[in-house]
Length: 210
Image 1 (tube, rainbow, N blue to C red):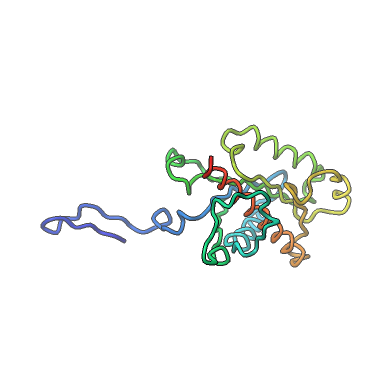
Image 2 (cartoon, helix red, strand yellow):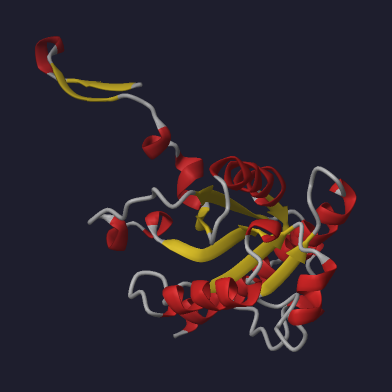
């Protein structure tokens, strides 16, 4: 809480601390996460919590030159700051409503969109994934984001065979169930967050130099 007091102890302005007044929030990148297909709300909440816990704070020392091909290093770090810097992300659900203030405050503008899906509840996984991409690309709000990814959890082998030729590991990520194969799902999450961070760095870099 900050209180500004004028002459004769009159309060002229008062701010009560909250999420919008936290300076740390202004350094976070906003990522919108959608529940895609016939994914239950409980599954969606579990996936959103998983992303928030394991992708909300990513050290740049996880990345290497192979993750940033062709980078002009607009954000070149000196004195070893690259090894100590990090990217912080806030994952919000589909109930996020844009504000008219968003264009004036960069931290309010979502820079990435993720779709999450419970594969066993969506037998036609290919069409669900394609529908998600079409919806993002047809939206004036989301098609300008710097990164778009689709995460399919608990994907059975029968569905994997139908996805041959799809960009698995690029924009489409097939992850095991966190409850039955936690280590396998964590490996997929680590791969995703490296790719997501690299895309965000390259995209922001292009915004800076353009």
